[in-house]
Length: 161
Image (cartoon, rainbow, N blue to C red; front, side, top):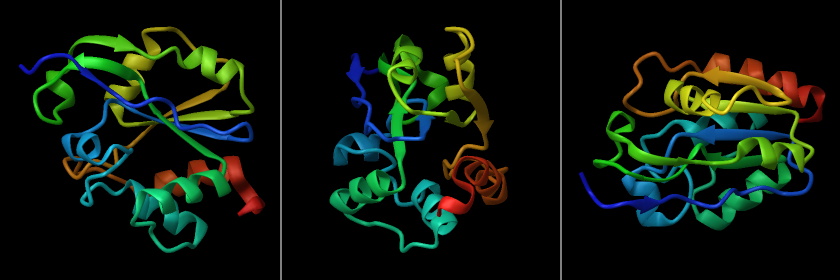
């Protein structure tokens, strides 16, 4: 078990409509300093495909994409002890105050990127917006479904894309 590691601050804009909530940044993400930094993770390919855009490669491009598409990112765990990138090894976690972020925003839905994020989030009780447990975009998830992601994003963005 490594020492306590800090996660990222929420990446959110005043007009964000959806919050995509992960569990905790991976080793690769922490090294890069931004969300979903592992090129094997399907997150960027999935959301880019939904909007018909090229996958952003650089952090600046990713930030611009999120801003234009009204997507906020955060992790339910803000600090913890963790081995590598394994959600199963998360210990002594500090949980984000997601409810406060949502209450002070225009966010209309929270999509939890995997069961760990959803389970940890629910420890704090229900949110005042629709909250959905999505199949994890992690390369370790053999049951990933891009279609499930597209269906939920369609509910939020509909014809606005």
